[in-house]
Length: 158
Image (cartoon, rainbow, N blue to C red; front, side):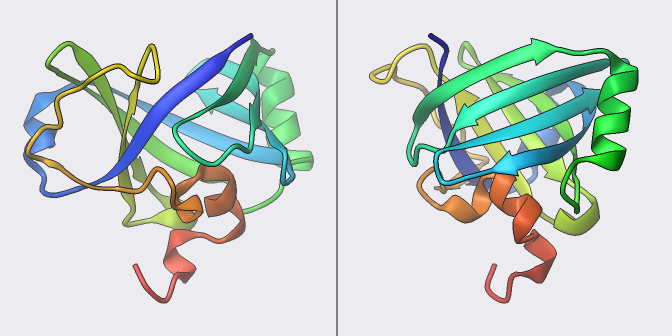
C-alpha cells in the first residue's frame, strides 16, 4: 500500500530561489476527480505517469503511480482530460535533510507558488525554513485536482 505524507505551505519570500538544486516542468490533466479519489496523467520532459490518489483531506493519503508511454499520455491529455490543465515548474530545494518541492504554476494558475514536503511517517519532524509561510495542507483550494476545476486566477480572495 502506498501512502503519501505531505504538508503544503505558501511561501513567505523568494529566498528559496537561490537554493534550487534542479527544476522540472510538468503538465498534468485529470481524467476523474471524485469525492473519494482523483485520476490524473502527468508528463515531464520524456516521461509520463498515471496517478491515482485518494481524496483524503489532511497530510496523508493513498497514492499509486504507474509509468505509461509518452505518446499515450499526450493523447490522453489532449483528448480525454478535463481542462484547464495543470502546468507548473517544480523546483527542488534541499533543507536540513529534506527535499522541498516548490511548485510555480503557470497557465490558469499563474501567480500561485506552493511548497510541499513529503515525509516518511506521520510523526516525522522537519525544520521549517524562514522562506516557508502559512501552512495550507487542510485548504482544499490548493490541491491540484481542485486547481484544475477552480484555477487560482479565478479566485476572488487569494
